[in-house]
Image 1: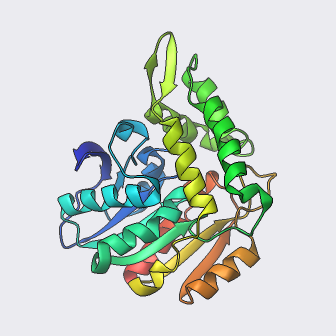
Image 2: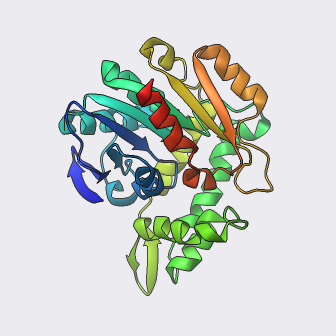
Length: 281
């Protein structure tokens, strides 16, 4: 794995992208960094490049316009600088809502898109009203963006009960935490811009989704939905009805559901299998 500055963003890469060869462009979720893609990269024999999105990790101070559109512009600039020409866009959670805007910006360079538990609008709910989302995520970010005595305490707060039934994944979750933390006082503080996180949550969950942009792109689109929400006791973020509505927007969208939650699905082999299948078709 290599970490470099590309067009103002910190970009992790696994493998050596060739300009004319296929490469996965991986877009992380709201409070994550590019480190969450290590498992996916380890399952693939094609290079993976993944930026820390503005407001997160080593890109915490990166300049970007407001909303998902601002994030998309910076991602496209990084792809331009890298000279990538055959891209599979993979996005998780907020990254999946961001993906259609990135696909639009990359145009014919995109050969396929994989959405992981996002991109498709969830079923309407009072909990998805702008003021509610702003309030909920405001509280969550205040719990998250502060000083912590050690890595394990931050990991427990950041991931909650997501890995309660998967002790085998604790090392992976801890690695995600280590990637976002920096020394602060007697402990650690996450490299996260709280205002940016809240604004991006509102944009992702309360604005009209950009899923329809994938119709004009024409490239294959596959959705992997988790069977559970934030942990194994929560209902799925994307219901069958929500996915059916998304299918009406993008008729060529295919999908599957995996026995995982919103976080543990990043350790599931389904995403890598989908990338391999799309590249071989």
